[in-house]
Image (cartoon, rainbow, N blue to C red; front, top):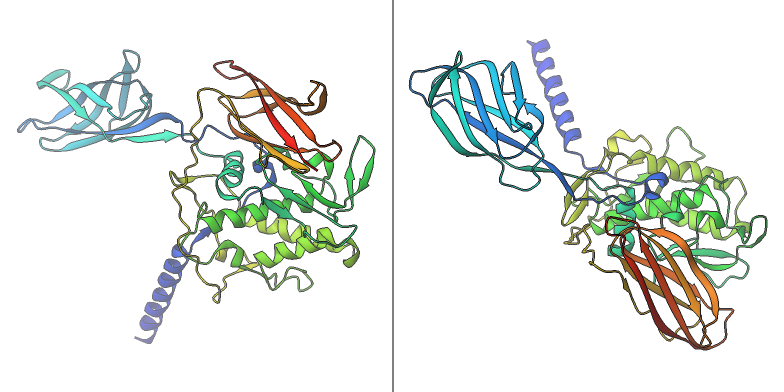
Amino acid sequence: MKNIYRLLVIGLIVTLSLSFLMAQPKYRTFNQINLAEKKQNAGKVLSSDVCFIFKNDEVGIPVNSLHARFNSAIVSVINNGGFTSIELSHKNKVINATGKTVAAGDSVTLCFNLAKKAPGAQANYWQWDTNGTPVGNKRVELAGSYSPISIQPNGGNVREYIYKKIITRPQGVFVGMPTDTPNVGWIRYKTADRKYYPHNGAARCFDLIATGSSITKPFVGEHKNLHVKKHNNHLLGEVHALKLAIIANDSGATEPTDTTALGDLIYNDLTNPSDPCNGFILRKVVAFVDSALTYCDHFNPGIHAQLDTCVTRINRAFDGPYVAVSLIPFLIAGTHTVEEVPFIHPNPSAAFFKGRLTDRSLIEQIPSQAILQQNYPNPFNPTTTIDFTLAELSVVTLKIYNMLGQEVMMLLDREEFDEGEQSVEFDASHLPSGIYFYKIIAQGSGENQQQFQAIKRMVLVK
């Protein structure tokens, strides 16, 4: 009896443990390579999965074949309903299903992936037969269920969504520590440029900025929207990716949305007591890295490699395929639970975030024509932002001219941009006060091959 009781208790514990694990929330992080991707046309419906229920309503007559014609071509058979053979004909709109006996009053469900993208799939007509002899009359207009198959978002969609729908401009995202301390630097990212990633250079502090093929200068002050080619630093890329993951979860763009936020989880690697990230919540890890990047002289050189290992592990822990729970509002599914990651731990003392789900949509309303916006701020000193929106994938040139019509700067030289909203920073530190003009030339390379030119005026006041 004791053994039976012990087995029952053990079984109950195992069941509760499995239930607990299954109920645990899954978190989501990003990797640099995905964040460097061109965005997908996420949400575009490619086809639909449709199921039809065919009932044998012939009284007392079993059937063993089904003939049906659909109002859409069948791409593939998802569920054959138990029929051993399904032959397609008439441009894949007609089926002849054989090899299964369906008793009178019974039903059979067949599911297909159809070329039809919109709802409204149906069997225009269908009929049973037995051993080649038709049974009863043809039935018509049998409606099926509808499940659209859409393009899933990728890292490029996530990057653009975070920068365009969540991050406040002109503040942006800081990496490093903004400070009045002389001879140190930091970065302010304000746009959704995919050239921020991926970094593969040695992990280090913000030491030097590349100004040419072999020319560098000290990394001092604020640098806006810094591309990889200006400072290739793997630690920079990883902490930037982790910041975006924390921002996304705080705003409700990634799961989970009803429990401890990603940024409040605790990092602690019990197998490596010397890990510099141990004991910190992930927000503190990011803050630690910011300090180490900016204040080169305050940290031992080896710390940057250690921090790079720590942050990279965090980013990999919850990385995985991009699966949208919803596009309106935009919500990306989590990938792994805390219990699956030995160096990440729950934080019982963290307050739950409330109201993290928003109604923001991933799907942009793309205009039929390109648009050049007025720069902001205007007047400005010495930097301003120029926004433009493209109706399709385009090659863009953006130039600055003075009052005499002389070109004073080339901001974009035949650079490729995706459709949608885009931003470019203009730094006029080396120019005198005055009136300037910015001109955009965009050559579409998408379906419409749209050409676009526009000029706007701006004022520099120093």
